[in-house]
Amino acid sequence: MSLDLCVYNKKKAPTEPIEFLKWFYERTTWDGDRDYYDTKGTDQDLVDFFLEMVKICPAMNGPYAPSKEEIEENPELEDSPLITEYSIGEDLIYMGFSYNAPSEVFVQLEEIAYKHGLGYFDMFFMHLDAKTKINVPQISKEQLEKGITEEIPKKNESILKRIFRFIK
Image (tube, rainbow, N blue to C red; front, side, top):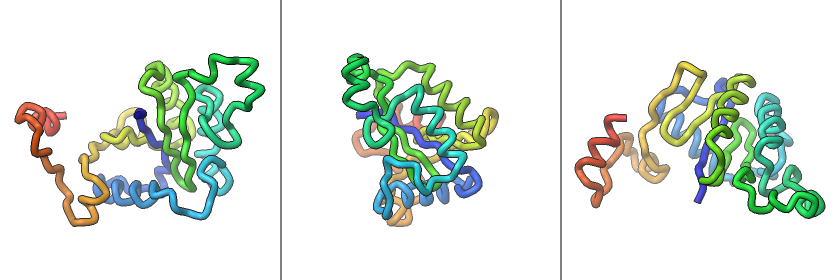
């Protein structure tokens, strides 16, 4: 399990929540003809973000991951909560962080994203800048494909959890 976040090119993503989810799901099928561990073909602002972020949170896989030699020289890298899985698309970077990653990593991520003019998505909100965040309903790709555009309470979810989900 991981804590998943996404940074994206705000110029290419819709700001309306349902349209954003459609855009997001379309791009995270990972079925394009590219290496999703490499920045080749990625918007430059995202590349700049990634190159800065990977210094803080090394990549788990791909050409930016620590080499065997680097891990041998620095063995704590192997089990570090900073190791992050990056999936790099043309106009977004999806990141899977360890639940044990220090909270300051997420503050840094936000600062670096805004520095490069990017938005980020924490699976609940689109953060367009330091002052603007847009609530995104919790709707699966499958629900959207069926035309469902409102959150559906889970059958075994308590009434208090249902209420809390909508209060956010």
